[in-house]
Image (cartoon, rainbow, N blue to C red; front, side, top):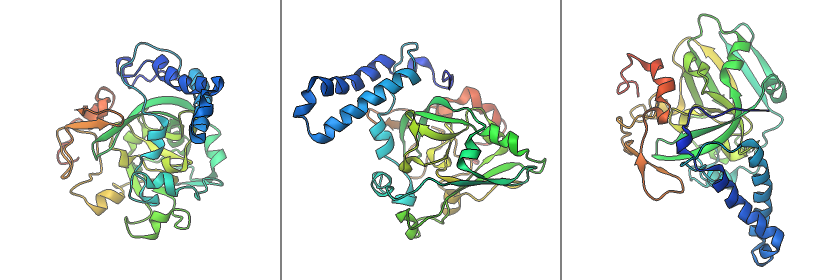
Length: 318
């Protein structure tokens, strides 16, 4: 497996690997020394899990230059989510996604392309070498995380599909299974959840299909088995549990911009100068931190992505 250095996040921003691993190792050591015997069963299980995680992480995230920004703990990444298909509370996806079945799974590639088709998940993934990438995730609600994703660039799928000159955008659709996704039994949103990118945004090297995080398969509540990750945009653009991608000529329908166009623009680039009507975007709260920190333009990826928007009024096209 290729372990790519995350050049999109500076080394000075991440907590030293040994600090992260030592914390996990402490719990693992407690289990080995019998200290865990005095702990609650759930903590014993967590310690064993931490040992496996630490061992795995050691191989996946080799030591690099000193870091100052810590990975968000696995428990927070997987238990504090927005995934309205499972409920509107932050803990609902974790609590309510147990009946969701991410396999078997089929993904349809459609629209203006030379090679449309429907693919079993395994066939869809097989041509691509997976990579581990550490990205910031910024929610429009002004909280953020730092997550080690596993996935591959969306551009590789686009290249295989061979879009025609008519393709200007890519539209994505989430699965609809109200029997397994209790949030879809109500009209919270206009199901299925839909999102879209301009074709050049989808082709950008930072844009990935994620199949896992922390070296594991994606948990149901995090968008299993396949989701989009676009790190310079607000989190709602990174659509989860994708079943369809379509090359289209016109700007596609997107769920949140259709539901509340004054709050959720199509581009949704992280921008500290354009506030959401309910949340200032100037500062953000990193999950696990007490103090807020300044929001970075394009979530800190401006040097890589800002040229795509040259000449675009980012207040009008928020």
